[in-house]
Length: 92
Image 1 (spheres, helix red, strand yellow):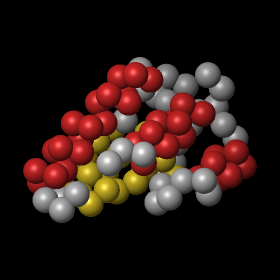
Image 2 (cartoon, one colour; image 1 turned 90 degrees about the vertical axis):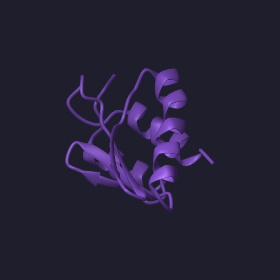
Image 3 (tube, one colour; image 1 turned 135 degrees about the vertical axis):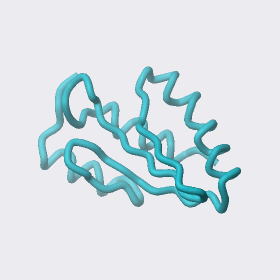
């Protein structure tokens, strides 16, 4: 899968709500109200990640889950990262 250039990354970020570029990754914080909500949200990420064979880095801090996505095997951002971000945003 081909790495995206800076212009393509910036253009794709404008199509996503709340995602930001962090070096060679994109990231977003999700507030789920409390720890139980955060853990439940992480559980909901399993299906789309497994379906794509593309797994985000996750960090839980009580009510907040930070999701960071990058294509590690390519060393940066690819179309798959933005596809997964879109699927995550569509979760209830």
